[in-house]
Length: 155
Image 1 (tube, rainbow, N blue to C red):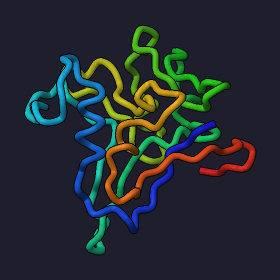
Image 2 (image 1 turned 30 degrees about the horizontal axis):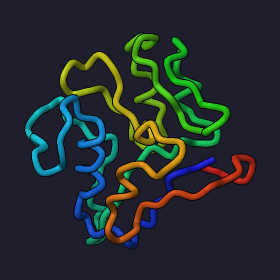
Image 3 (image 1 turned 60 degrees about the horizontal axis):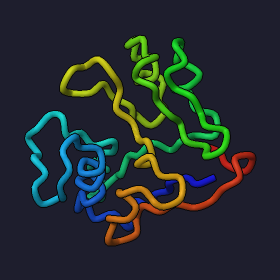
């Protein structure tokens, strides 16, 4: 199973991952060069924050081995795919209780800005066979994907 890893020491805060994520999930086709950053419909599934020590802290969904968000989801809208290991979201099943938002250990899940009626979280760009856009766009290779065995992985 593939999992996103982060080497925060390599991150220079360029936000290429953020823009690549927004581009991958936008409604209208296009490139990163015509991405409207002011459109609330163009949301990223990751965030880069200052770490308070002069560096950056990339925050991404870890698709945890035992995801608290899935355990907290009363409607069954969040499920861990047994084949890919990715936590998947079904907005049609979502009860909008946002317990997943409150239970995420990494603070990565959030309500969408446009309607506030669904959550926004990493879906691995819906790719199982290649790296998601954030990984492919990182010039410093601070974000990377590795195959892991879930029995060997902790949060």
